[in-house]
Amino acid sequence: MGSKVTYQEAGVDTRAAAALVNEIKADVSRTQKQRKLHNSFGLFAAAFDLADYKNPVIVTGCDGVGTKLELLLEHGMEAEAGKDLVAMSVNDIITTGGDPLMFLDYIGIEKLHPERIKRLISGMCDYLEDCGCILAGGETAEMPGLVPPDVVELSGFCIGAVEREDLIQPETIQEGDVLVGYASDGFHANGWSLCRRILAEHGSEFNEEEIKAMLAPTRLYHDVTNAFKTGGTKAKAFAHITGGGLPENLERLLRGMGADLTIPYWDNEPVQKLLAHSDPEDRFNAFNMGIGWVAIVAPDNAEAACAAGPGGVVLGEIRSGDGITVTVQS
Image (cartoon, rainbow, N blue to C red):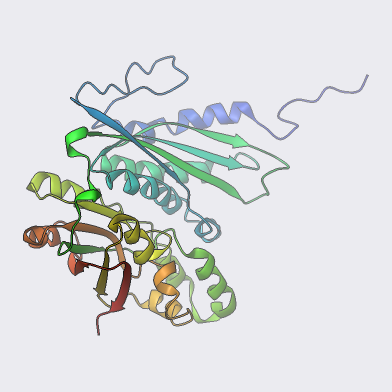
């Protein structure tokens, strides 16, 4: 009989994976300062006690980092990738008016790379700690022969809750309501197939510092939604501006109504260098164009809404007739 083959020889090291779990415990514990899991010992799934909510509605979201991940890994920016992963799901959760409670990650990798994974987890925990969301678990899968070397598959899943009476109600939007936008920190995690194409063709125009600046992680907008809650300002809707830009992400809220928006010039030099090589019309459907979050409010709440977060500015108002137009302030 031939020699027997171990799992490790086949490319999967379960002992190293178990050791990694112990190494990231300090990061994971940072995410349980504001909230705790319920009866977590010995369970194979995470549990959260909703007793603090009187009439809770569960909200969920999942997302990834898209093709931006390739450049983040190439430049050793795994922590930023972890932040992107969290923000893309948490921002969707908080559009409901809800609280992000638990987050789970999936990491698929050819061979266990402890330092790379620890950087990913650390970035996730930085953002999760910031918004009071628990890193409740996840999966790191070694898949030799299926995932190519130096590639990481990355997905994130968020679970939140909101009191039924506090659930955001876009159906209350009407003509004359005001759209307030808040600044993005860059392209966030959308439009990077276009960015990568432009960088492949015009890469000599960009230095590494400029590329890293454009790779800034997706901003968390929980400070904006928390300011609405603590200040008593009522929002009729929130929109996280992701793929499709302002037009697509707002049209889903307006039920046949429309808006003509005027956005500030995006004062970001590396971004503007890249935009110079993009189609002047298509860019508004690919990128957030400097506005990563929008609140829709009644006119008498516009001033308070503008003060709820960095870059808060009135973009326009709801009108009759469908369609969203976007122009840049001259």
